Every structure is written in structure tokens, then in C-alpha cells.
Image 1 (tube, rainbow, N blue to C red):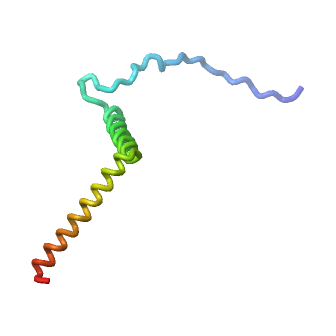
Image 2: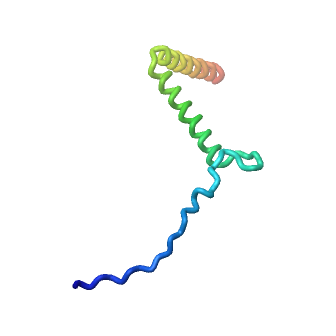
Image 3: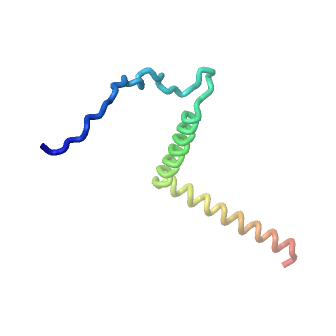
Length: 89
């Protein structure tokens, strides 16, 4: 017969993970956990970004963006005109 490895002496141990209490969003003192707060912030940021992308994808959203850009240009032009007058040009 071929050489067989020696048997390993092992001890059976019961799974103790079921004894751990499930994680909650708040501590016993009523304070939100770091993971809960981080998840809420990330969710709000993702929702905000998604809403902005959807708004930009609509014709109305593009019209608002164009109006804002036109207003910005008009404001810069008016400011430059005021500066030229103050310099006496």
C-alpha cells in the first residue's frame, strides 16, 4: 500500500455566530452608527446627482441651463461696461 498521511486529530466546535445580535442602525444609547450615517449621506448624494442628470436630459432642463448661461454672460458684460466707465474709457 501507498503511504497514507496520518489522520488529523480534530475537535468539533459549534458555530457561535448565531449568538451575535443583528446589527442595527442605532446604538443602545440612541446614537446612529457611523455606517448608517455614511449610507444616508451616500444615498442622498447619489439621489441628487441622479436628479440633476435627469433634469439635464429634458428639453426644459436644457432651456433653463441656456437661460442661466445667457444671464451669466449678460452680467459679466454689464460688469465690464461699468468698469470701463469707472476707468474713464
